[in-house]
Length: 371
Image (cartoon, rainbow, N blue to C red; front, side):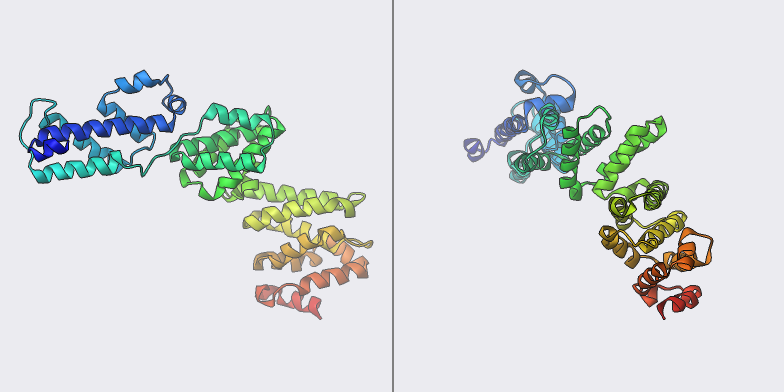
């Protein structure tokens, strides 16, 4: 090519540069992985198929694999047209000057010959097999995390959907479910809006089809990733009210002091990562206040840190509900009237509330409990 340029044969130089670009693009596809390319294109893809591809088809494939950017595809496609019409490879429509040659070479060098987007795809069958074999060691988890980070956005989003489906599948083994959740948790921070949309769409499909087991597992998946807010207020309402009702139920059972902590921890987990919907606030506050106050025999000491965190995080509307509970016909009100120890514990909880969080209409009741 240098000889061609020095001799003023710009049409030959363009042909040489373009051929070098095509060779490099084919090499990028090889580095990406022929097996992975077959999975993405949905058809058998071997070396012979790669060599037989037309230049336009190769550019399309590289764009699909995200080996070149959209801008790079547009500019390289223009270079392809220039090469076809102004090089020695075909009858030329005209003659290029040195400025046009430099522009051509710059585009080819930047978008085809450079390795700025030298990504690798994930071998999906191998990944799924590894998920199902054994629980990942920290090194395995890190290795697969890096592979997923190195692939392109479209495949990464597809993999998130696959992992969600595996977690929600009742037929999946425990190892596969734990591994799927671990991989998603490690990559949750880099999930794109498209990935979130994919997960929500799959969740709504389970709802529409009436697949109760998958729907419940999907709720757990979103909860573990801290993404419940994506499901909408109705889903959050359902989860919080169920958790509150479960806490209330176990609180009234025999041996409640030993059984309450995990239920209190779950309710804290739900309410700490999501705003409690207005429709669920009464059920939530009543269960929290009743369990935290306890009965005449005491409270679940192991659950105390969870109750403390939730009470300190109450919104003004929830504080209002808390202070109105003793005035209503509730289990908590009966205990406060009957047992001095319950009144003392409830008073201690009320004193933890910041006065600035107390609504104006609740200040008289608040004043009664802090004296």
